[in-house]
Image (tube, rainbow, N blue to C red):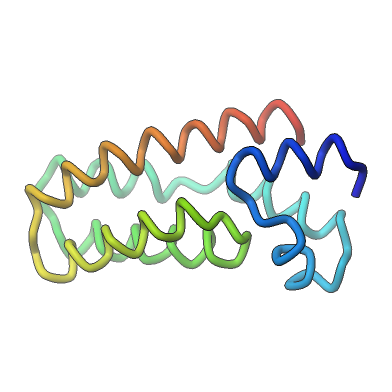
Length: 118
């Protein structure tokens, strides 16, 4: 991977070396997976579920997002996702909504950055 791209991805909180190790060192697979991340609609499902106070649906969407963030080595997003999953599993909707505001800001920062680079 070219250094400017690697540096940009790392600045977005992606541990590029770890992510590449998951994809057998093949840059193109990582980049394709990052594009799939951008196309994923679980963030909208999560937001709607939270607005409708549906903890179960919100949990399933958040759990999916957590897995994607983990596989892509988006460490900060993964940690926030894990915290949200716990809150949703415990049906702590108000706390989850507060944490979602933090998560959503970070999520869209990463997404906007990725759109510039891939």
